[in-house]
Length: 223
Image (cartoon, rainbow, N blue to C red; front, side):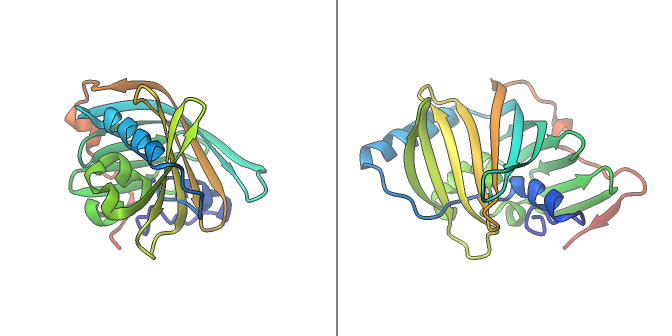
């Protein structure tokens, strides 16, 4: 999904808003679909998660303002090992790494040479990353609604905590249970959309994939 709420970066507002992608998200009020749609959407999520221990994908990411104007675009990669390990990398010009090693979550900005680290459970609380890495806590952390998309089903999530800096998260799932993408609405009404490609279920991932050691000269913050 900073770690000061995932994350707060010392960059111009456009960069801050763009990187909020990793924490940002979730909804305003939407019309409730029939209960059968929710059952279908939850079933699609269950199919995606069933037997899933590792996962990887490429992604494209766009940020638009409240009028729909395109502000930024980026590409990147993600990999995860359930329940609490994740690596999320954005490419230049907005380069950033997010690494959860099971105990801590690191956010690293190579250009600024700054890293922020927090306990993983605190850092992931009520963020989009929690949906991916801690799916067993979905209902504990979010109010879950539903909808449909052309390719399958959509889950719409609202954070239960008042401290979240996002209002809406949309999770699109194919009828076969594949994860298609995510969309986030932040508190500034900016929308980030992430579309996944080259998805792989249960790929072999080395333990080093989820380890992070700050490079020499990195300023490390522990809020």
